[in-house]
Amino acid sequence: MTHASFASDNNSGVHPRVMQALAQANAGHHPAYGDDPHTARARELFAEHFGPQAQVFFVYNGTGANATALAALVQPWQAVICCAGAHINVDECGAPERVTGAKLYAEPGRDGRIGPEAVDRHLHCLGFAHHSQPGAVSLTQATELGTVYTPDEVRAVAERAHAHGLAVHMDGARLANAAAALGCSLREISFDAGVDVLSFGGTKNGLMFGEAVVFADPGRARAFPYIRKQATQLHSKMRFIAAQYAALLEDGLWLDNARNANAMARRLAEGAAALPGVRISRPVQTNAVFAHMPPQAARALLQKQFFYIWDQAAGEVRWVASFDTTPADVDAFLADLALALEHPGPDGSVLPGGHVSAT
Image (cartoon, rainbow, N blue to C red; front, side):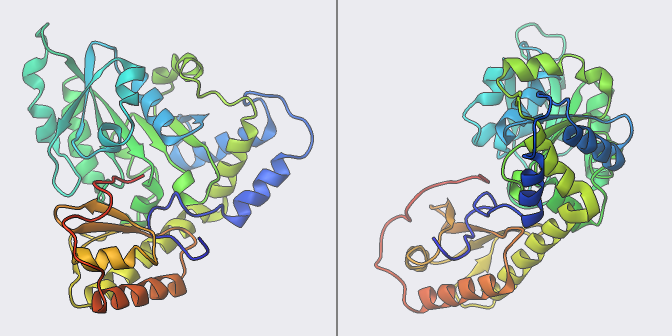
């Protein structure tokens, strides 16, 4: 595929500055398992962005970040409250439950978000031996529907959770996009709002591989080195993950990348909404666009462009912009979309594919 993909921000390549950082990290030999200057520099930058007490651990991927972060918060007899559409509930093949041994309590959300009432609905379980005990809440920022929690919304959930002894985890696979959309710092929409442990994603924002688990309180991180190792998430040549994050956090690259992805999603949404037969179905707050369109037109568009069918029964599709999406990429997609609407494909009962979450 030579043209830009709007299926996922996982489909984009690596930012040139990140690639340069990888090349620099490749020079010479360095101590393994994080005892190297690249990892030391990355830790300094995390402290600048998340606070001097923040403690960061690098892992291979987003599922590993979420599963191990939650394992540091809950026991096997506990449960994690999350939105029903959360990545940990829909798209991680039960990894959080297998790694933690804990149950997920999936709550209905509104535009991908849950509120303090999601905690309230499980308080009756506390102290009752027959029920998994609520031990944590997990929030996704930005959500699987591309929406964001404001700092006040995060704080409201965190305060309710903490009042009843529950910890708060944030799946920040697209935290940069949320911060860019809200005009907030990374810390303001996470730790300052009451989050205890954060999975901070980089792969969707210009990295080649690797994610970060960040603790607001080092006390919660005491067991994490062992959790990470046991869960097969300890990278021996850690400098290659850390160097990428150093490039991302230095000089605002994370923000530039996220702003571009968000802006291209808005451009795409505005252009698509102007076409007859397309209705934008969700608020466009970050880099994801959800739309309803005729199934025949979607089928025709799939012949030229790669994207995911979000809900085939409803005829809803998802388009995602990336850090390197250009206005020309968007305009080319819109031209193909217009042509597909004018000349739809053959009729069919369902669209190819099915529900696909934010992979």
